[in-house]
Image (tube, rainbow, N blue to C red; front, side, top):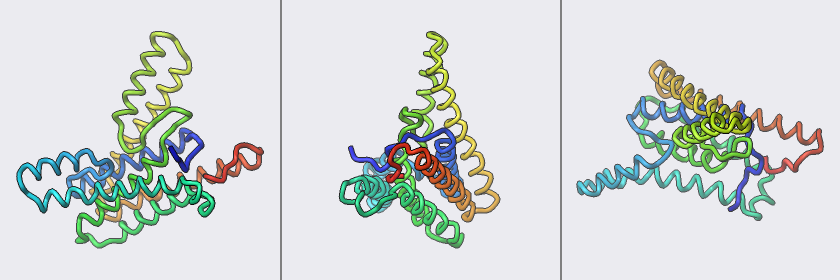
Length: 232
């Protein structure tokens, strides 16, 4: 499997990304009553509409799914050998695209069509979901909490039964990520209720923080003569 992010995420980066995931889910739910990050709900609603023979409504449910697929495919294409020779810093490119798209959404008028926002958020979410997949060498997700909660429980159980310090550390890492997602969702609800559409600029600001952290990590590696940072 090709990848554009060969370096595992550190906790500050993972926590910021998880807060973005929680914020975006809360933002679209508060404004439109839908979750735009992951597409399970849209697939289920598509099936519901099809069985009810609401063909137009069913087709609309596939639009954000398509945007998510395009975003995931874009990350895969950036990881191919040919693309690597053209785009030296694909991670920075992905984050810049996310920041630009979310900033664009923040400038839209309040009466902008709902699909413009939900489809754009689905694309942004796919870029993030497909790029940032490991935290301190362990798999994690920044757009949902289910898998992270399970990993936290498993690691916590292993620590309690085996007194394994590494399991304790993993439980702490996953706990922080789950907390960051929840905090992002809480802030997302509050900001969206207060400021409406422009509130999504907060998520863009969080991603600016992620970009700054990754640039700093890369420079530290360069100064230390560490791993090749060209893909960051």
